[in-house]
Image (cartoon, rainbow, N blue to C red):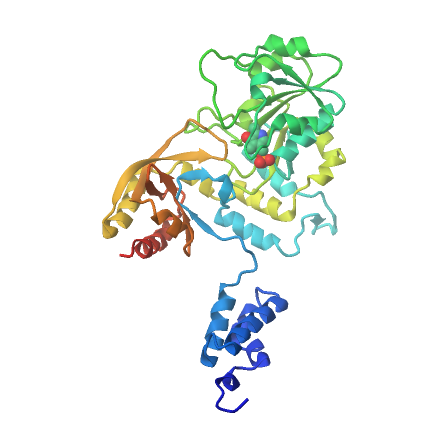
Length: 431
Ligand SMILES: *Cc1c(COP(=O)(O)O)cnc(C)c1O
């Protein structure tokens, strides 16, 4: 190799590995990954694909594009608040900070004052009981499906679970609740018809063999017309001591007038449910979790069941849940109750400079909740082809494609991201 061969000017591997770009990358990437990127860039230079002088800048670009997690942050401009494909509820800044704090060593099972081991998750449980004072006790597990498995296993394994026919539901992604319950060894006893089930249907089905009565909120659909179902209060007065478990689905802790058909934990418990189940990352706006609230004796029975250990939550979930409940209004609740006039103003501030229209657009609750409820708001009306550019851009922006248009709804976009949205739109529209 002669000295005027440009390849002689290619930086050495060890120089690249100690370059500022490589040093910076060490805070978030494994050494092996950094070495691999260095080798890739060097190989391109040796093949003559890039000039020797471009090696360092190229390495810097490549390393800064690498991320320790391949999950891509997304701006949710669909208007769907609890967006299942985007990880349901976004955490509040308070919850995110609590997760960060809990990521190191924390006193999750330690009483620092006494210097002895303590019960796990007490703070999150206390926060739940503060938010839902009618509950005697609370337990947090991995998700609502796990809560349902734990409840039916502990109360009805080898026995019958009575469930109204209209409540044999599929939640999404092929998740069928009846299959889940039967997987626990409980036998489902179906009562009533698709559209009508009475208290007498339940009462007639009760026997020695019955472990519990289950009510399941149909979540993602509604039945209209000639319908009837037995509510918790009616069942309570008719079924004696038999435990009534109510799977609320989304998980409001108290009624919300915006969502009149969504059941809530406080009302269900007041009406006589012994145990209610809710998701942490739907309307509650927190981390993925299954929340069990109800009678102390039943919650204790569940907590002591061997299966409880298999569905236990980690410290990060406990921290996020507590901060969601004790901190400021979480994003899900802010977005649900966003003011339409304010959304219109923000949309117009972006659409104006681009010369595009703002149109009325209804947001949705999502996550299988409140299927009929339209959250009135506004969207920026764009050519359909913009949707793919926004989705694959940086930042990634997910919009709603409908009727040949790309609709960008700011309901679930934090206001401080409006400037990024405008920049991304400028780039996508080429204006
Ligand atoms: C969403 C839902 C579940 C499952 O909740 P996860 O937290 O996702 O496990 C269970 N039951 C009902 C009625 C639901 O709506």
